[in-house]
Length: 501
Image (cartoon, rainbow, N blue to C red; front, side, top):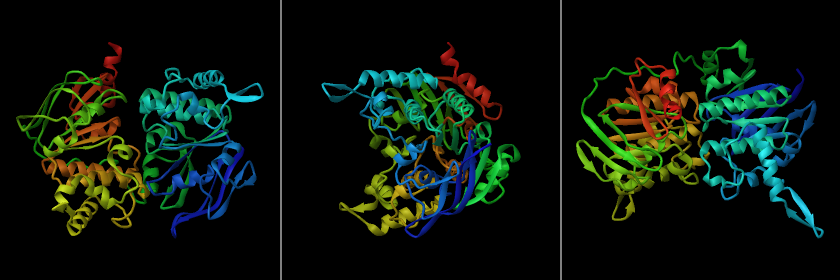
C-alpha cells in the first residue's frame, strides 16, 4: 500500500502541560486506521492537528510524501482531509441541505447578480444522501427537528460531500442504532474500496476489530504501538491503553441479597414517545432498560425525573407522588444523569465547583449566601469518592475529559443521598478505564441501597451489570429478561419485536 500520511515527531502542549509527546506513525492509502486510547490520551488533539484546527508546537506532517502546514480547517479540506467531530458542528436553525453545503453554497446568476440556488442544493443533497444509502432524512427538514442519529448521519454526509480522500471520524457511532452502524460500516467499506482513507476513533473496541485494518494506541500523550488489527487481541489493546493488565472489562458483581421491597412503581405511563409503560424497581436493584435508539427508554427516564409531560401514576415506597418538574423529583430523592451531559447535565463554561453547587444551593447556603467552606468540602468529597481527575475544583468543566465530565454529573447528586438514580447512557463516549470506575460506582451505590434505573444501548454492559432487564421497542415494554440466562440476541429479539408486528 502507498503511504498517504506520515506523522513525524509531533509535540503539543497547553498552558505548559504536554498533551502530545514525540508522536510518530504513518497511515496507508485506502486503509481504516483506528486511533484508540483513554480520555486524555491525546487522540482528539492529534486529529485536530491533522485537520488544521490546531498547529503543533513541533514536528511535521507529510501528505503524499510532501510536508504540509495547515493553518485552518479550510486548508485541510483543500488538502482532501475532513474531520467529523464527536460533538455536532451543525447549525440547528438551518435545513439539512443548507448544513451539507454550508460555506459551499451553490449559486446561479440573474441579471449579473449571484443568488443561492436552493433547488440545486436540495437536489445535490438528495444525491449525496442517496449515494451513501441515507434515504429517510428529508433534506428540507430543520436540523433541530432531527433525531440524534439523523444529525450524526447528516454530519457524515456533509463531510463526504466535500469528496475528501481522508476522512477522520471521532466516535461516529455513539448515537447510532445497530442498523445505522451497519449502514455506516457498509459506507466505509465502499469508501475504502474507492481508495478513501479512514481514521476512526471509537471507545467501542468491538467496532475497531470489525472495521479497522490497523490500530494505533496512545497513552498519556505518547505513542504506545501501531499494530495490524489481526496481530493483536482485544485484551492486548486494552492493556496497552490503560498501562496494566485488565482481566475483564467489567468488575466482579458483588454478592448482595435481593430485596423484595418496592422502591418505585410506575403504572401505565404514557406520552408522545411511549405507551402504557409499567414496572417496579426494588430497593438496591439495578434495573436495565435496553432497546435500540428511539425506543422510548430515554423519554421514560426523563418523565420520571419531571422533564417531560406524561400520563400515569408513580409510586415511591408505596405512596403516590406527583412529578411535573425536576424539583418534584429532587424533593423525592430521584435524580437523573441524562444521556446528553453537555446540554442537560453540565454548564460547560463553569467550574467543577460551580457545577457541583448549582443544584445543591439549598444545602450549601445559609440566608441566601453560599457557605464556601461547606461548598468546597462537598465538592472535594465527591471528587475523592469518584476519583475525578481535575487540576483544581476551579477547573472549567469543558477542559475535562468525557469520563471526568460524567463523574462531575454523577457527583453533584451524591450530596443529596439519592434513593433512586436514573442513569441514561452513563458510559457513552468515555474510555474503558472511566467506564470501569462508573460500573464500580453503580455496584457501590446498589450495595448502599440506592435503586438504579440503568438505560443503555450497550447490550454487553446491560447484561453484565443489571439484576433484571426490561426491553423496549417503539415506546412499549416488549420483554423482561433475567441477565443470568439471557444473551444479546435475546435482547435484540425483543428490541425489534414492535417493528416486526
